[in-house]
Length: 232
Length: 257
Image (tube, rainbow over all chains, first blue to last red; front, side):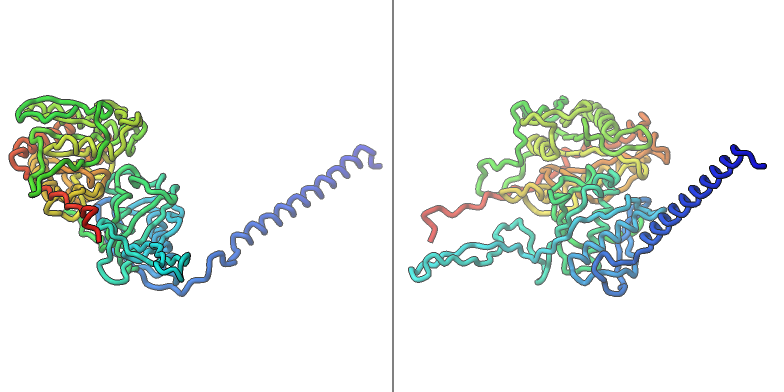
């Protein structure tokens, strides 16, 4: 004869087992959803072309050098997106473990703007004759300021690189490490986008004096081959 | 107020930019029509201990701040240069940077303005780093120019002085090499070196050895300061300031078509 309290204990245990089974099934379902989200291959960015060979100018803090290194990466066709992708790929290389020029991971660039040189403005022209009175026309005018950047060859462009504040805030401080980052960006752009002749930097859309207390971010840098040889 | 000090007269001063000195950029006084050499106070050395106050600069090792290293090295240089008859101008002689005319801590442009007003024979911008060893000397990356144009572009003011800066760099490198200090020479765009109208160098002190704390060793800092001060002894007779071009004449109103 099974006593009443034993039956109560039995059914309580059955209820607990069912509850635990239900909880496990729920957690399993959540885990599966999480893994499926991670494996989601839905494209977020516009599709890019197949991989192509690019040349990165990679910095090395230990000997203060910049060396050229080839990589196969996929790049968008549009030039400004291309410049941005190149810089982001460069910074991603520096974020890898064991990097000779360690930087924090994450996107470095908000946007890159490519501006044809010489810089052009627009002047409003008012016709003198009475027939066209009130019909103002806007005509493009090249800057007359001798200090403004000038192209060294036809088709030359000025690249304005808008760096992310988060990248700048976390950049290591020091003359050499900051100069190497700048030189690395300049060399990479020069090697892969030769139409870029000069480069300026902004940080979150604003001019900023230095990268991390040392390297000048106000000047206009020439885009050039920055590869160097190891110091003796 | 800044005054032109007679050669050989030893004095030191920390600039107080609020004392009647606007943070002006290179002024264009009335100039003669022919190019004239820029005036120099040949026995004045300008030293800018980088950072200060809330701007600590980089962290070296666990507990050393760049601003403290630059100030310590500046004090050593000031003493050694004063003993050699130089007038030394420091942009700060305490942790905090002095206020400018607006009551704010002096900016990098203010520091360049102070140097340009003083017309020193050499401008040394002191920095410190935990990477590498020894001393890193940097001169401006600007392309050298033959003369100072008028008006002088603020961000290109150093161009006419680049040749003299590189000559000074060679002098200091030679002295540091003889003193047995590890040395790196290069060029870099470090604010505000491109705005200086004097032979200008960035002197970045790195640790003596792999131990980052060795940057604080008194013997090491004194060794570096003595080498730099020794190299500057003959500099006043060697520095050759560039000529300043006359201000281009502006068309008068009556000359307009």
